Image 1: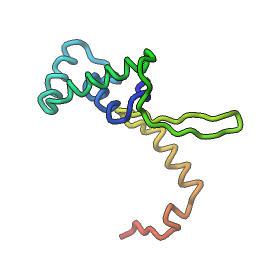
Image 2: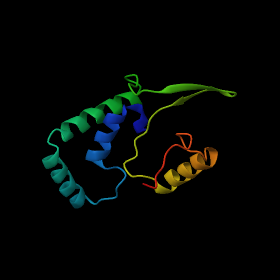
Image 3: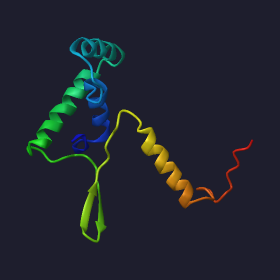
Image 4: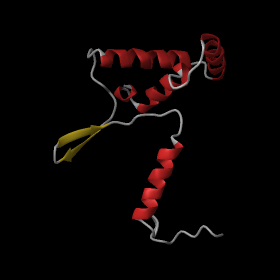
Length: 116
């Protein structure tokens, strides 16, 4: 859903509204007070991003989020960036292992020496 707005706005939504975290009302108020002290403009920025997201989801405004269209055998697919506030360590590890298997010489053709 957040992919309908640009990544910067996704970060603002995640940072202020924290949808990925399970907090009770008291903890959420404390968190928002702290984050607002550290980033005074964030409530306004996140509010604007939320309004934009709602307008796009209600088909009142086209998405401004960037995307890439890729042709496949079954037709074109759209790829949009999606911000994740927490690193998915398992998925990252699998991706790095797959990259290493597919390119054992490394991205620099084996010229990278990490022993020094």
